[in-house]
Length: 460
Image (cartoon, rainbow, N blue to C red):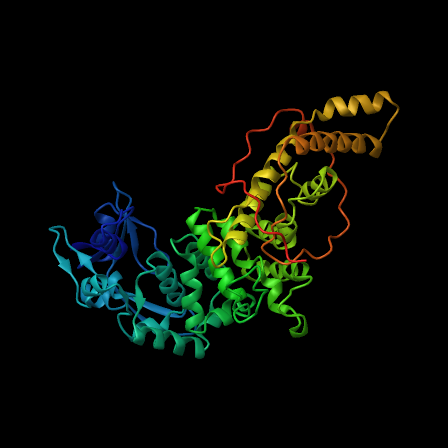
């Protein structure tokens, strides 16, 4: 029996990157021998064990055979006679098919070290085409190492897999799992560029794919192409270390522009509502987590209003806060502002432009939260108010506080960096106040990373 470290741990060590966990392959052993040695069986589809002390995963060397479509259609064979080389040939990329024994000796039968040096993502063997998840994994690795290229023969193999309908067999949970991982990589836009290059984006995310080639007004989008803009927004999300919720919102915030009638182009009147509906359908199809979906839909609906919020008076700012349910969900509102800043700066030549709306609206939320709702409620009751009149009194107290604050602060000019927002829906009723949302002073709102210089005025 002999154990080898394989895959990502070897690859990352050779790249000089941190190694967070290690996977092992064991040759010359049977499942019973592993159990007798104290290992704990955990594998369902094939023999995988946990080391009794380190709890690292040890898998018996195995071969596999394609038996059906998709990534579940495999039969596995693990036995003492399966060699390390036979195990490595079934792996996806050459850079992931390097093993290392206990003495530090590398086993590299497929040129993984050569491809690491050349910064190339290359598939190991024709077996790559048997598992459609590998298309997503390779695209995710391209997002992790954006200076790596994809070998031409690997691109051709991926295109053939797409044409054969292999990606159509992927289940929603696996697609979302890989997309979410890719969104959190160093250059998430690269994942979607690779998927588009091989035709997989139009099968997995047709709503995003159709954005490419859709024009926007050059006055506010020098890059013009909506798909290019979306990729630039993702780049800004990564550059500012945004969480998954914000990155997903950045990916889908403009989906409505993909359905704008040709006669209306390059303007996109009403794209906010169309986008919100498209995101809802996408969320259901991919089973996107609620937290991600909620922020994405809110961003689609409100991003142009946030962009154009600079000249709003206190009452209008309050209506915006209410529509966003900001008093009850301040964390989500701050995430919305981060997504909007990435949208505004994710344009050709806009990366260093100021975005004062973020700081202004974050401050406005803090002012509204600081109003003593209990005192306003008690005063209203003393005046004989009841029911909705009490809530209205609290709201008026918040508007009054916002008015005082706005008079004392420099109001930013309008900045959409986008077309003027479509007409807003009637403001939803103000959420019922709670002591926790108004009776205590809020924490200091996060400041924008941009200087507070007003940007250009909006497109009328």
